[in-house]
Length: 416
Image 1: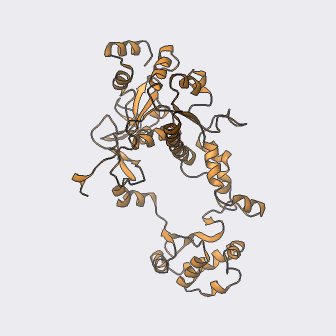
Image 2: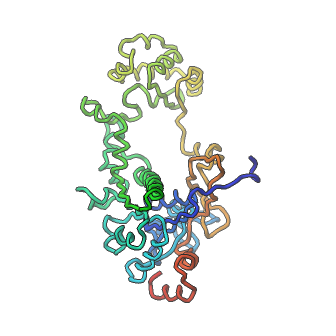
Image 3: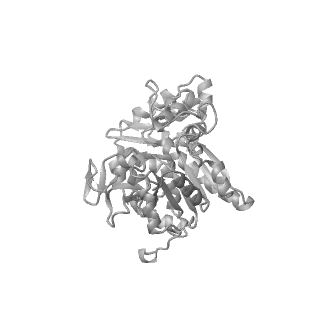
């Protein structure tokens, strides 16, 4: 299909999401729903907005600036985390602002918030408050530790959650300290669970006619993912939990060649046999220490050493070629620069140019796209990140029927 014939689909068109979100987990939830066509409205504090708006560097079509030079420049962090989202300003502590929020919630499908546990309830805008004006609302609260439980009162960001979830205990070298994952994994994976839980709740609402409350915990998310692996078995057996660039259960993971690193997976006896033949070491198949999957797991260091010694006689190109030819799962270990330069990601929309709703031109920088391709058509074109309160007039006019003079009064009174 040519670019002229490209059709667009908007799977969540007509869905209105009201978000009181800051930093990353909540905002990324709004971004993902907006990518699928939902109207995602970010409610921000007047004058200041999301705290990340103040974190440099700042960008416009002319480049980056360490300090904010014009009102139209936006923080690159905010730009990445707010593509396709609309922004309104609203003082939720003001009685009129509180009522405006409830009036908008009454005409919305979903509310998402990621403030400290209980903060929205103390404002009179918690689930029970919104439920009174909209019995069909799906209300999702994202927090570090959940709304209940011994840790629920604690504030948290991604680094603390990585520590508390146990993920740092299994990440790093065997003889080294616990290691943090190199990106905000809790802040980014938790919104994915939030999004599909919201969609599941909406589907349930189609059946029952009732909304519901979603209590989403960043710590629970990471811990649940971690125990997909057989970690408890290694723990009970006294085996090391941190494997570095190796992989628990088999001699797979990172290997060195003469001129670079590669990744190899040998997760079955068949794959081990193909690996041994590929590197010219059929004796490894007959060695009783390596004959079966469990045997290799018990003799992991010896198996890795045997393979590593042989691979050091190959260049990276040679190793990848013979492994591919013998159907051994393997890959290069690429740099971030190589990823940016790989046209694959740009053609599929995984990486996109950064945009702001203040400019028609693209900005320097990269934002993540939606990593799934729909056969029915392309997802909506991203509109970029909004200026603070950019949609005040449109949204308050369309949803609440507020005219320009009323809007001016609200602004002078500090409501918006």
